[in-house]
Image 1 (cartoon, helix red, strand yellow):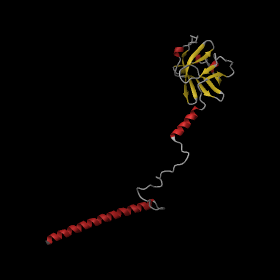
Image 2 (cartoon, helix red, strand yellow):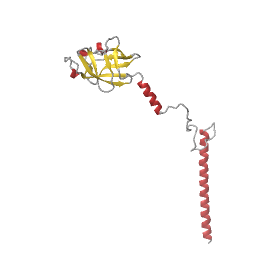
Image 3 (tube, one colour):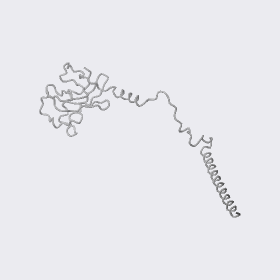
Image 4 (tube, one colour):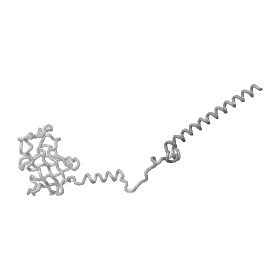
Length: 204
């Protein structure tokens, strides 16, 4: 019986010591954390809690006049379309060509249009492509009205712009670039189209 009491006392003493050590260790850890917080926030008190929301993590207040993605998209679309060349026919300034036999450009967004490079002789089909506010003009091939068979039509590039169109207050301006062959300007044929097409245009 005495041995049992002695063993029970020893076990109870060991458990008590262990609990006391664990409590002391927990206190030490808490003190270290408090000391670290005081060092991290020397001029202010400790934040409300470690899991609480700090000033830097607070959700910013909503303000009026916030632009949503849809409103920004709508605004950009409006700005992008302002000043672009519209689908209409343009007549070259200072040219008396009411019938548009040679000094007109009919802008179309789909399909092809016919351009006159030299009246009653050289006519081509062209397509347009928009690049910002600039309209690029590409050669597609000679049109049915063309009577000039001396130009190397099959050699001319169809993916290199032959002209650029930019909007103006009165209408548009066409800058003739010329035909290209294998990505290089075809110097011998660059003059074709320049006289008839290059210049300022007004809406018909």
